[in-house]
Amino acid sequence: MIAALFAAREGADVILLEKNEKLGKKVYITGKGRCNVTNDCPDLDTFLHEVPRNPRFLYSSLRNFMPRDMMALLEELNCPLKVERGRRVFPQSDKASDITRALEKGILKAGGKIRLHTSVQGIFADGSGMFKVITDKVTLLCKAVIIATGGLSYPSTGSTGDGYRFAKEAGLEVTQCFPSLTGIETEETWPAILTGLSLKNVSLSALRGNKLLFDEQGEMLFTHYGISGPLVLNLSSVLAGTDLNDTQIFIDLKPALSEQQLDERLKRELIQNGSGELNRIYRGMLPGSLSELFAKLTGIDGRMRCAQVSAQNRQHIVKMLKEIPLKPASLRSYSEAIITRGGVSVKEISPSTMMSKKLPGLFFAGEVLDVDARTGGYNLQIAFSTGVLAGKCAAEFAG
Ligand SMILES: Cc1cc2nc3c(=O)[nH]c(=O)nc-3n(C[C@H](O)[C@H](O)[C@H](O)COP(=O)(O)OP(=O)(O)OC[C@H]3O[C@@H](n4cnc5c(N)ncnc54)[C@H](O)[C@@H]3O)c2cc1C
Image (cartoon, rainbow, N blue to C red; front, side, top):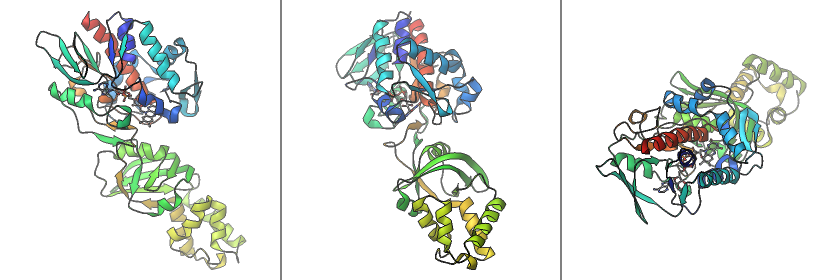
């Protein structure tokens, strides 16, 4: 959408082909229907820090069109915005549909045409410097083509990986794809008992062998298959496409306290509650359903009198509060993943134009590329920045 908007603004004769009955079906479900449209990042380095794969490839496109530019564009298109915690930007209306509507109006105002219900079947260079775009309705002859077909996640929104096929058919390398920013299934089944319980201000870490892969504080959620929520999605971005053998996840329920501080607190409470049950202490320290389960996780009978808890028991309880272990079994599938890791290899694409190095006139933008970011509005901004550059450069290429 944004590539079409900027190409049309540059005066190109633009046709946006969309196979769905409306534009931006995925945008409608972003940010739980509110669309975290970008991140009001103060500078480029802060932004690129949130991009685990191929951040340097994005340098030119982001510098050319920063989150602030996207925010200004939306305001100009009559879509007022607000900035929330973590610099996350949303439409003031809390309606994702306002973002799509603003872009759609912008495209039409700039003279771009939109063809809905039109599925592209193939894109081929015809040998005379033009491209044949074959759809289920018509075949178009174009001077330049921008492929912005998205990835493989949430295929019900239209992103079914067609762009990877078009790229491969054009002889371009496509790296292996994996679901990312998704929930993690655990070998342990106990998280299912806590389904729906969200933990705030916990810390999640992951080790592979002795190597620390991840260590962050925030919010997580227990589900029927294991764990999810913001912290877990970002952890999945590190684990996506890697061998999970030898990987161990730990939940720190009390990240603000060191083991020693926690031990002192527990010691105090055990003395104060001498004849009471150990379970009572858990109830004071942990949210409802977790406090009930915690005794089972420690293997120490929760009905034990506090006065009977040995120093060894105490040490074990502290260890469990600081490091509940979980073994990741697998990541949830594309149908639940927020993004796709992998895609059209960045080695194939010029970062300053988004054009294929092998096939001049063929451009790529958005999630179809092998770049992905963490949660927080960064993925849409990557689509916007690469889209703007592709739109402008495609228009210039087409003359
Ligand atoms: C549940 C969910 C929540 C998310 N929330 C956020 C968020 O709050 N903030 C954020 O930054 N990111 C979020 N994302 C990620 C973000 O939505 C994507 O990274 C972004 O939409 C990618 O944009 P894109 O234009 O590259 O691809 P898409 O948005 O997937 O658009 C591709 C379009 O191409 C069309 N298409 C595909 N193949 C063809 C074909 N052959 N012919 C014609 N049309 C075709 C599709 O129908 C689709 O409309 C979320 C993703 C999901 C799944």
